[in-house]
Length: 261
Length: 274
Image (cartoon, rainbow over all chains, first blue to last red; front, side, top):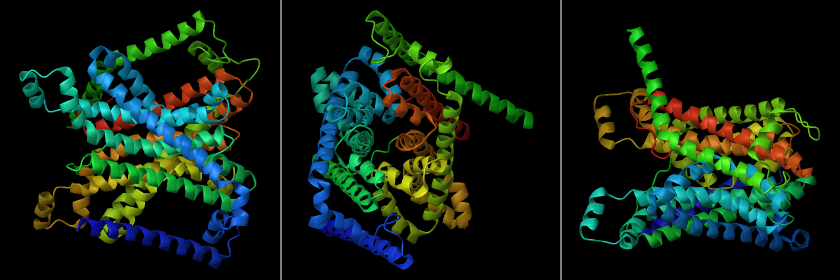
């Protein structure tokens, strides 16, 4: 039953994509739109799949560079984010000192820091990693904190009464309770992480899809730009679906969505 | 009667300010401490302003003309604020409007909602160079980028809010013979307000990001332009001045939105997080 609905869901999505491509092609061929304004989907896909064209662009190099940054930043921000959130909830003093700074940074447009990292660390992997990390980190910290704090008071009383240690309180009660919040935070930060990486590569990189996008822009090479756009979307989307899949695996009991503020 | 309502309104505003002050004085102290420590570290270790300028140095660049790089701050700040505020307003108006249309017709919702959720998970910012080629340099490009960045969160949140009405309430109102128009103005839209405001709050940050990235990619005015230009000349202090202004503008917009939220829905408790 459930498998059926999943298949149906995927089929529906594929149908949307096919319809979208058809409309796109129809618009291009009916109105005779020039390639440098809006390339047809076949020209775009040609850049990727026709070997003679694809050779010029070193797709593998750029895709792996981008994936490398996104995945490293994503993993680092999840691990550090959850650790920091646990520390914040562990000690009241620490939370009083660090929480305002985290809230402050969370509300800053961190993307604007990109050129600063370029000055500090030069071109390449490190500044991009830092930017993506900085953008993805704070939603995870804040969401995990909310989750760790959102335990039923009655439950806390009960466990305290039974003489649980602080460790037990965290591992048996607080952390399992915060899982839905953590995943909600991770879902926000996946999208943010991809966005941070792209902007980082716009400004401070010599390889990667964001760099290629800017490079192609200089030559008004629209098909390549659309190719980059599609590849970046595929990367973002597959990561998002991966997180959703993991969420289901980690918490098969949970089907409520956490709404974010 | 009118006097009383004015008085009430003043009281609401006053209470709001009191609550904000009471809630926030400690975090504000911590943040001031953060800047103080930053200033002290720069002074004690004598760090070059090219690596890390002190906050006072950044402010100095903002308010006093400098011999090496003299930016016309008023113009640049004006341009960025214009882009960001217009982008935000377009997003708010169109986002809410489109969400209402979508929920109005069930078929539209079935077709469009999955598409919106899909697009929302895409990296919209990657469209920026393409939009630039289509529209050319200038204000409208950056407004459009800011608009696109904030649009989908607002639409999705508003739709979720309009949809999350209790079934019993709908049954009751239908039974009483409410028109569809009444259903929206009396039930669905008031119910959606918290969702709309949380969408708008996300949107404030996203519009700033959109406007700044637009200026990174192509512009000859604006704070994003100053940041990129100073990066080329390795002149760090103006970057920090620009970052400060951007943060204040983004934070200010966020506070305005929360304030309006509180005026419209005085019955909601102040959000716990901020």
